[in-house]
Image (cartoon, rainbow, N blue to C red; front, side, top):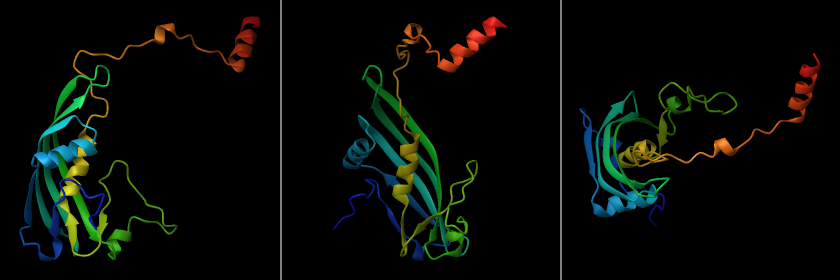
Length: 182
């Protein structure tokens, strides 16, 4: 039974057999994969999608994926629904550790809570077996780079703030009355 959540640009890499200098991975999506990406990410279309990655060993038994994902996409403007073209050009970087690695558990405290540094790099992901999905990692960075509120240039959202009067709370009314008496 196929994995229903598998990335349209999935590219499995056997990390048990990585060459000394690493393994280059190129994901150049064909029309069917681009159409699937557009559907998954709510885009009008994906005209181009390419990920150039390098999978290398990291520390003792970890794996590092680094590279770049580039794409040309079309979205619907949130105001006019007209097509808006955008270019994505993002660095990709991720570290994977086997799930039984001590380093993989290092980011957890005694209570099992994950400790994160908001300004620091992402924590390592874990994997089971001897394969990772480098294509799915590139798709994550692609998805994060998509503008969630695309607008055609020169189009603004109509503001009706001039018509809105602020509502005064009971506390504000009492405070206003007291200050008038003083």
